[in-house]
Length: 126
Length: 369
Image (cartoon, rainbow over all chains, first blue to last red):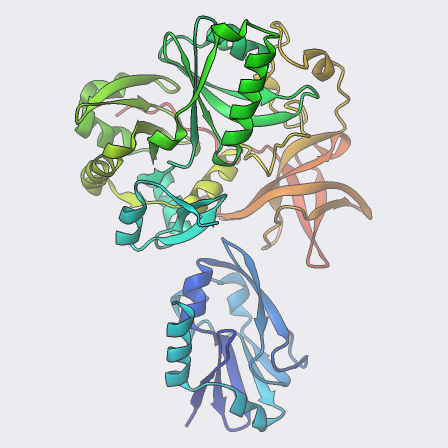
């Protein structure tokens, strides 16, 4: 069974054994607004926890995407490049971005679970 | 500094607007989606709060002579009940601000950018005191910005909404014309104009009735697909129409000729810095561009031809109405021809683009009911 973890920079990671699928949260897509451009790391790239793995642009601004975990990129959601609106429509499903092989599972401890992330967002909006 | 609030601020909160600080004003950047709001203005209609804009009245016995001396467009051609686009020039022929000039009969209303209200007001007061163009006693400058709200209804369905409120005759009002009307016992200005390239209306009213005017436009607009719109949509729409925005395409160091605003410059009349402008060497021109791949080229990005920098981007966006990434830039004259291939550097990568006429969407401003 997979578990969902969240970073302070509003990315989520769906953990399944030693792999993680990564995207941005519903709160993130709402504050960014209409997504019109996405650029992602490539398969076999190494990503580092809290380091950039891509760029996302809405009609309002360009933002960096930070990886919640370190690891090697196994898969990239290529269809997202031509359908960036999927991040708005379905941030946790169709809007997934990359899948990585988790390099260091102890990094999971620094991420939040769903309840903790909810509290974090509630605080940030006040 | 706490951003200023327009009289419609509470309405924006009620409608769950996403509020941002825009040059010192707390205004909606969007209500739900910039793309949705932008489309609505091209397909039905959209309502904007533009109350941050400045309204400066020039009156006295010689307001026309005074304004003629400070601007390159010929205001003597603007009859009472008409408005025209113009720019205030400094002594180097740079643009102090762009504006709409309304001929009120015995005085003129200058509608200026929010961020430039103080600069323009100071410039006008200085020019008055210097008495170079008309005697100081013959002109009076009044900044009415703090008392006036501006609502803008834009889109092909706007005329139907406005007719339901103010009567069918309103539809005879031509583009770039205005009337003064009574609403809740107050005088308002209703002009057929806007910043979107669509048919549309702008309503200037005292702050005290802005809320009720907003409510009735919203209520009558419901049957015509009215969508509340923020500044995000306003920006995309003006880029689609190729309209310059102060601080992006124009500023104190750009002259109207390089800004491709030649039609605003009437060399047959006298105006400040006319000789400077006549003899100015135009090295770069404002152009439009269309990206050949997905990518937003934003203000400040460099434009290249082969390995050489030939210009700078001034605005860039995604146009939902064209389904293309578009923008405006200044490029060296020899590269300004429509169809010229260029490259724009975005985050250390080069993206292909093509020079285009900046009227990406041709004006559709003269529709009837």
